[in-house]
Length: 93
Image 1 (cartoon, rainbow, N blue to C red):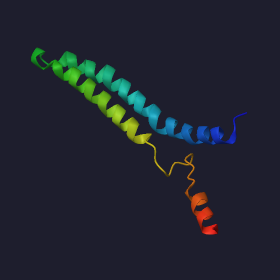
Image 2 (image 1 turned 180 degrees about the vertical axis):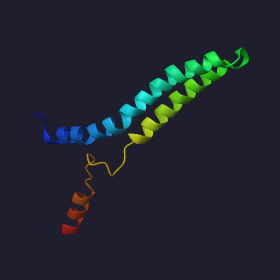
Image 3 (image 1 turned 135 degrees about the vertical axis):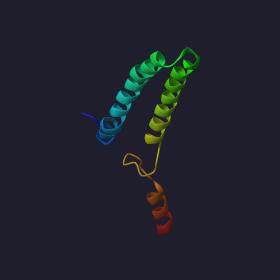
Image 4 (image 1 turned 30 degrees about the vertical axis):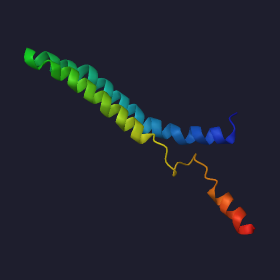
């Protein structure tokens, strides 16, 4: 049995991972393995660098999107703000 905080964290993050992250991983893998391979075998020799360029670009976009989606924000349900307790203490004094 998980403590309440960890259970809430698990319940809140699993839908984000299944809805956003898994399709993103599948698209990244298909693009870097299949599309880049097809690009490499269809372009002339002088443009073979395009395959590596698009693979690196896809990796960069993948990590930027992942970092943006999982950035720390104050509206996250697992983020507990102690501002209300601090201000209520000062008001009582």
